[in-house]
Amino acid sequence: MTTFRTKAAAAPLALVLALGLAACGNGEAGGGQAKTEAEHAEGEESHAEGEGEHAEGAEAEAGGERVTIPAASAQASQIAVATAAPGAIQETLTLTGRMMLQPTARAEIHAPYPGPVRAVLHNIGDNVGRGQTLARVESAESLQTYSIVSPIAGVVLERQTNIGDVTADAPLFVVGDLSRLQAELNVATRDIGRVAGGQNVIITGLDGASRVQARIASVLPTADAHSQTLIARAPISGSAGSAFRPGMAVRASVVLTEARVSVAVPREAVQTLEGRSVVFVLVAPETYEARPVTIGRTGQDTVEIVSGLAAGESYVSENAFLVKAEIGKGSASHDH
Image: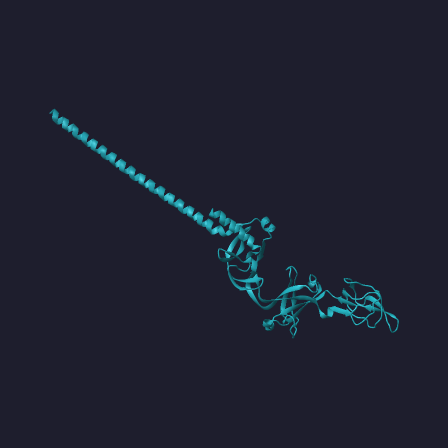
């Protein structure tokens, strides 16, 4: 009897122990599963953070061709902004030549009657008026003294007489009106058919600073014996030619054709960045964006923008290379 009770009591105890072990096993399994799910969630979160960091990196890279330049710095660097607008593209021909007096702006003054010079009143460089006395000569025939006067207003360019000289066939004075100049341009034989009267021309000094617009009046029919070129004459009158003097060497751009385009910008506004032609567009206050553009016809000073820049947009028209340099600095910093 005693043995029977002992077995009966042991059975429930074994059952309890078995249930406990099972519960413990289930707990460990549940804990492992929970741990795996937590680790998976943490991995997903890390992956999401990685994706976010990648997106931020892509945004930074996309904005790498933008740069912020304070207005004060842009002004100090003479970075000029203009509004994109229609313009003209010109095909030009470059010629060289010299600035000379117009034929009617130069006067050689002779003595009408031979005789000794009794007075000389003006020297080289003096400004004289029309009808002003330059010298006095005593006629050898009448023994009367008469005046030598200037037929035009201008500057005494040459004086070839002194008191006591006896006048002859040579001019006593040469007077020139420096306000009436003309560019005499050398036209090569291969370009004879391309240059004609009525064409516009831009004339510049060799220093590049002196610049004036004119129009070709005529092309002489005979060639110069020394240069074997024809001479095209472009008169300049008034204050427009005040920076030039007779005898100065000049360079000229003759406008052969001119075409109107929807958007034209200065050549210096177009820069090359990473192998692409770009202009720098002012997209926000003090913020410039490198905008890829497609170039069409190219003139001496301007280029046509076919696409990439619309009329009305603000872009850097002068010293664009400084904006390019600032973007280059930003790219270098980003690489590091």
